[in-house]
Length: 227
Image 1 (tube, one colour):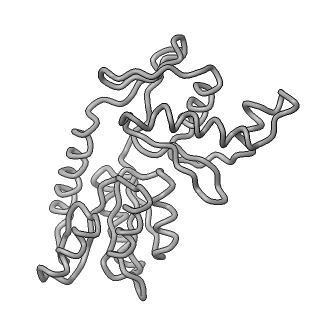
Image 2 (cartoon, one colour):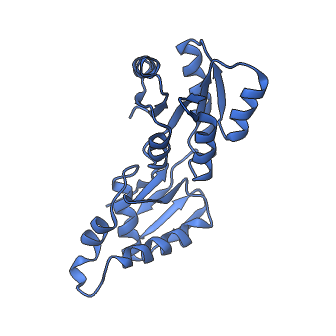
C-alpha cells in the first residue's frame, strides 16, 4: 500500500504540483489548503506523513504543526518554506516538525527526506502489534495484554477501519444494540477500558476521540494473527 501523505499548502498550484510529483514517486498524496481543516485531517489518523507550508495565508504552518503535536499527532511532518534563515527553521523544528525543506527544491531531495523520516518512524516500531482472536490478546515484542471478548471485538472493529472514524452510534449498533438495556454510553466505557489496558505500553497506535465524528485508531494498525 502506498504511503498516504497530506499536503497542507494554501497555494493550489504548488499543492497540485506536489500531489502530482509525489504520486510519481509512489505516494498517495492529497492536498488541503486550510489550516483548520488540515489539523482536523491530521487528527483523523488517516495519513502516514504530512508536508506543511510555513505560510498558510493568514495562518501559520508552524502553529498548525504545534497544535497537531499537542493533539497527539505523531506522524512525520516536513515543513516547506522560501524562508531559509536559521530562526525560521528553528521555529518549525521546535514546533515539532521532523525536517525543514527550503524552496526551491528537487523532488528527489524531498522524497529522500521523506524516506529518512519514514525509516526513523519505522525503527521506533519495527514490527506492528499482533491480535489473536483465539487467545483474545494483543502483543508487541515481549508485551502481551489479554482482553475480554467485548474489548477484543471493539478493538477489532476499530482496526477494521483504521484511520477512519467510526461513530459512537455505529459501534453501539454493531456490538451492543441486541442487548436491549444498554445505551450508547457503554461505548465510552469500553473505550476507557481499552485505553487503560493499552495505555501503559506502546503498541504503536492509540484510540483517538474525534469531535462529532466518533473514534479512530491512529498509528500503526495491529495485524490479526488468526480468525
